[in-house]
Image 1 (cartoon, rainbow, N blue to C red):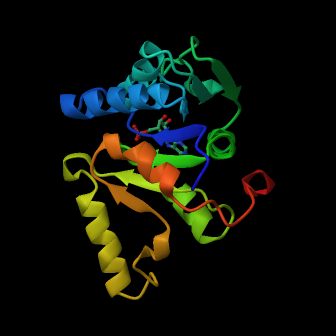
Image 2 (image 1 turned 180 degrees about the horizontal axis):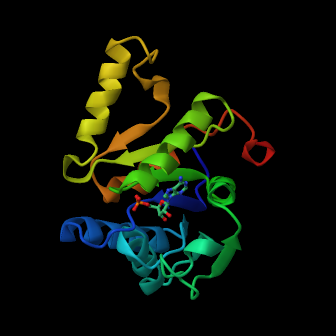
Length: 194
Ligand code: AMP
């Protein structure tokens, strides 16, 4: 069992998306708050990022916003976060998000979400950490990506089937349970040594 005190959420910064995705993000924030789990996120008030934080704060939960200085305006930094941490680069943001969380999940998002999600998956592949990672496949959003990964396995680029690097759940309601019931990380947290 993984001791879950903080969940890192990677997700889209766009607000011009399906209402069901925004609603799912809010629900995840609320469920984390109700479970006493902090939300660690990219710190913006826009898109699904803002919706997760809003759901958590509305339900009395703690949110940890980690935002690079140059994005504070563009992504409308959530200064009301319980911790509002301004960093000096995208790399510093990803590093700190990784250090502050016990588990990671990816909601629907764009290129930034892909970058963040694949970095944390590849760090696990490289045995830099062993924290649970969940792809939240809301409305089958990640299906094309899962097909690509199957293709990579078929072509011999992955030893497959993804060797337990990440888990897929269909609903935000399954995230906390799946993260908490994952085996305790076998590797001590070494991310800060990157
Ligand atoms: P997106 O999924 O493109 O809407 O972006 C989601 C979040 O990822 C936003 O907060 C972006 O600032 C962030 N992001 C975009 N590119 C990168 C990157 N190369 N490294 C880390 N975060 C990124």
